[in-house]
Length: 189
Image (cartoon, rainbow, N blue to C red; front, side, top):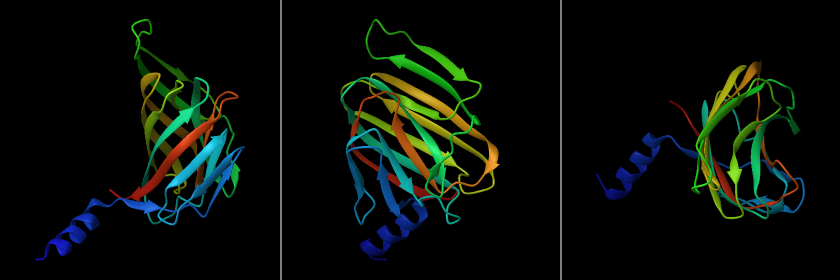
Protein backbone atom coordinates (compact mmCIF):
# COMPACT_ATOMS: atom_id res chain seq x y z
CA UNK A 1 0.00 0.00 0.00
CA UNK A 2 1.40 3.41 -0.92
CA UNK A 3 1.89 6.13 1.66
CA UNK A 4 -0.73 8.39 0.04
CA UNK A 5 -3.24 5.51 0.04
CA UNK A 6 -2.55 4.88 3.75
CA UNK A 7 -3.04 8.56 4.58
CA UNK A 8 -6.32 8.69 2.65
CA UNK A 9 -7.51 5.52 4.40
CA UNK A 10 -6.59 6.86 7.86
CA UNK A 11 -8.32 10.14 7.06
CA UNK A 12 -11.57 8.37 6.21
CA UNK A 13 -11.42 6.43 9.49
CA UNK A 14 -10.83 9.58 11.53
CA UNK A 15 -14.32 10.75 10.62
CA UNK A 16 -13.78 14.52 10.93
CA UNK A 17 -15.07 16.43 7.91
CA UNK A 18 -14.60 20.19 7.71
CA UNK A 19 -17.85 21.98 6.92
CA UNK A 20 -18.25 25.15 4.87
CA UNK A 21 -21.24 27.26 6.05
CA UNK A 22 -23.75 28.26 3.36
CA UNK A 23 -23.39 31.81 4.72
CA UNK A 24 -21.81 33.74 7.58
CA UNK A 25 -23.77 36.59 9.19
CA UNK A 26 -22.26 39.04 11.69
CA UNK A 27 -23.81 41.51 14.11
CA UNK A 28 -21.17 44.13 13.29
CA UNK A 29 -17.72 44.12 11.73
CA UNK A 30 -16.86 41.57 9.02
CA UNK A 31 -17.02 37.81 8.65
CA UNK A 32 -16.48 35.31 5.85
CA UNK A 33 -15.78 31.65 5.18
CA UNK A 34 -13.06 30.42 2.84
CA UNK A 35 -13.74 27.66 0.33
CA UNK A 36 -11.99 25.28 2.74
CA UNK A 37 -14.26 26.24 5.65
CA UNK A 38 -12.08 28.55 7.77
CA UNK A 39 -14.27 31.34 9.14
CA UNK A 40 -12.53 34.66 9.73
CA UNK A 41 -14.15 37.46 11.76
CA UNK A 42 -13.03 40.97 12.65
CA UNK A 43 -14.66 43.37 15.11
CA UNK A 44 -17.87 41.32 15.48
CA UNK A 45 -20.35 41.19 18.35
CA UNK A 46 -21.76 37.94 16.93
CA UNK A 47 -21.09 35.43 14.16
CA UNK A 48 -23.79 33.12 12.79
CA UNK A 49 -22.92 30.00 10.80
CA UNK A 50 -25.84 28.95 8.60
CA UNK A 51 -26.60 25.46 7.23
CA UNK A 52 -23.75 23.69 9.03
CA UNK A 53 -25.74 20.91 10.78
CA UNK A 54 -27.28 18.23 8.57
CA UNK A 55 -28.39 14.61 8.64
CA UNK A 56 -24.93 13.61 7.34
CA UNK A 57 -23.41 13.83 10.85
CA UNK A 58 -24.62 13.24 14.40
CA UNK A 59 -21.85 15.21 16.15
CA UNK A 60 -19.97 18.45 15.50
CA UNK A 61 -16.80 20.11 16.77
CA UNK A 62 -16.29 23.86 16.61
CA UNK A 63 -12.78 25.13 17.34
CA UNK A 64 -11.55 28.69 17.36
CA UNK A 65 -9.16 31.35 18.52
CA UNK A 66 -10.60 34.78 19.24
CA UNK A 67 -9.24 38.10 20.47
CA UNK A 68 -11.52 40.57 22.26
CA UNK A 69 -11.22 44.26 23.00
CA UNK A 70 -12.73 44.03 26.52
CA UNK A 71 -12.93 41.16 29.02
CA UNK A 72 -16.29 39.41 28.56
CA UNK A 73 -18.21 36.16 28.59
CA UNK A 74 -19.16 34.61 25.27
CA UNK A 75 -22.01 32.26 24.40
CA UNK A 76 -23.75 30.26 21.70
CA UNK A 77 -27.34 29.90 20.55
CA UNK A 78 -28.68 27.31 18.14
CA UNK A 79 -30.39 28.38 14.90
CA UNK A 80 -33.17 27.08 12.67
CA UNK A 81 -33.14 28.62 9.21
CA UNK A 82 -31.51 31.99 9.80
CA UNK A 83 -33.12 32.66 13.19
CA UNK A 84 -31.55 32.19 16.63
CA UNK A 85 -33.58 30.16 19.11
CA UNK A 86 -33.87 32.42 22.18
CA UNK A 87 -36.29 30.29 24.23
CA UNK A 88 -35.55 29.54 27.90
CA UNK A 89 -34.74 25.87 27.15
CA UNK A 90 -30.95 26.11 27.51
CA UNK A 91 -29.15 24.72 30.57
CA UNK A 92 -25.49 24.78 31.66
CA UNK A 93 -23.18 23.48 34.33
CA UNK A 94 -19.80 25.23 34.62
CA UNK A 95 -16.45 24.61 36.30
CA UNK A 96 -13.68 27.16 36.07
CA UNK A 97 -10.19 27.85 37.37
CA UNK A 98 -8.66 31.33 37.42
CA UNK A 99 -5.27 31.84 35.86
CA UNK A 100 -4.31 34.51 38.40
CA UNK A 101 -3.65 33.85 42.08
CA UNK A 102 -6.49 36.18 43.12
CA UNK A 103 -9.11 34.25 41.12
CA UNK A 104 -10.36 31.07 42.78
CA UNK A 105 -11.83 27.93 41.27
CA UNK A 106 -15.59 27.67 41.22
CA UNK A 107 -18.65 26.22 39.60
CA UNK A 108 -22.15 27.27 38.70
CA UNK A 109 -25.21 26.47 36.65
CA UNK A 110 -28.36 28.08 35.34
CA UNK A 111 -31.78 26.53 35.68
CA UNK A 112 -33.16 28.41 32.70
CA UNK A 113 -31.51 30.52 30.07
CA UNK A 114 -31.60 31.65 26.46
CA UNK A 115 -28.00 30.68 25.62
CA UNK A 116 -25.12 28.38 26.58
CA UNK A 117 -21.87 29.86 27.90
CA UNK A 118 -18.64 28.94 26.14
CA UNK A 119 -16.20 30.75 28.40
CA UNK A 120 -14.74 34.03 29.60
CA UNK A 121 -12.24 35.95 27.53
CA UNK A 122 -9.72 38.44 28.84
CA UNK A 123 -8.17 40.95 26.47
CA UNK A 124 -5.87 38.31 25.03
CA UNK A 125 -6.38 35.47 22.57
CA UNK A 126 -8.72 32.74 23.80
CA UNK A 127 -8.88 29.21 22.41
CA UNK A 128 -12.05 27.15 22.63
CA UNK A 129 -13.58 23.88 21.49
CA UNK A 130 -17.28 22.97 21.52
CA UNK A 131 -18.58 19.42 21.01
CA UNK A 132 -22.27 19.38 19.99
CA UNK A 133 -24.36 16.20 19.76
CA UNK A 134 -27.70 15.77 17.96
CA UNK A 135 -28.38 19.33 16.74
CA UNK A 136 -30.08 18.17 13.52
CA UNK A 137 -32.14 15.43 15.17
CA UNK A 138 -35.50 16.08 16.79
CA UNK A 139 -34.05 15.27 20.19
CA UNK A 140 -32.28 17.07 23.04
CA UNK A 141 -29.09 18.78 21.86
CA UNK A 142 -26.12 18.52 24.23
CA UNK A 143 -22.71 20.14 24.26
CA UNK A 144 -19.41 20.24 26.08
CA UNK A 145 -17.04 23.17 25.73
CA UNK A 146 -13.59 23.89 27.02
CA UNK A 147 -11.78 27.18 26.79
CA UNK A 148 -8.65 28.89 27.99
CA UNK A 149 -8.30 32.61 28.43
CA UNK A 150 -9.05 34.69 31.50
CA UNK A 151 -10.33 31.46 33.09
CA UNK A 152 -9.84 27.84 32.09
CA UNK A 153 -13.42 26.59 31.84
CA UNK A 154 -15.34 23.37 31.19
CA UNK A 155 -19.03 23.78 30.48
CA UNK A 156 -21.76 21.20 29.88
CA UNK A 157 -24.74 22.57 28.01
CA UNK A 158 -28.05 21.30 26.72
CA UNK A 159 -31.14 22.39 24.87
CA UNK A 160 -33.99 20.52 26.57
CA UNK A 161 -36.66 20.47 23.87
CA UNK A 162 -37.03 18.34 20.75
CA UNK A 163 -36.07 20.89 18.12
CA UNK A 164 -34.01 20.39 14.95
CA UNK A 165 -31.31 22.99 14.26
CA UNK A 166 -29.10 23.69 11.26
CA UNK A 167 -26.92 26.57 12.47
CA UNK A 168 -25.26 28.27 15.43
CA UNK A 169 -24.48 31.81 16.60
CA UNK A 170 -21.49 32.68 18.79
CA UNK A 171 -21.76 36.06 20.48
CA UNK A 172 -20.22 38.27 23.14
CA UNK A 173 -22.04 38.97 26.37
CA UNK A 174 -21.23 42.68 26.49
CA UNK A 175 -20.47 45.56 24.17
CA UNK A 176 -17.09 44.06 23.29
CA UNK A 177 -16.08 42.71 19.90
CA UNK A 178 -14.32 39.53 18.76
CA UNK A 179 -11.74 38.93 16.02
CA UNK A 180 -10.08 35.70 14.92
CA UNK A 181 -10.79 32.38 13.23
CA UNK A 182 -12.98 29.34 13.80
CA UNK A 183 -13.83 26.10 12.01
CA UNK A 184 -16.58 23.48 12.27
CA UNK A 185 -16.25 19.73 11.68
CA UNK A 186 -18.87 17.00 11.45
CA UNK A 187 -18.39 13.38 12.55
CA UNK A 188 -20.31 10.22 13.43
CA UNK A 189 -19.68 7.78 16.31
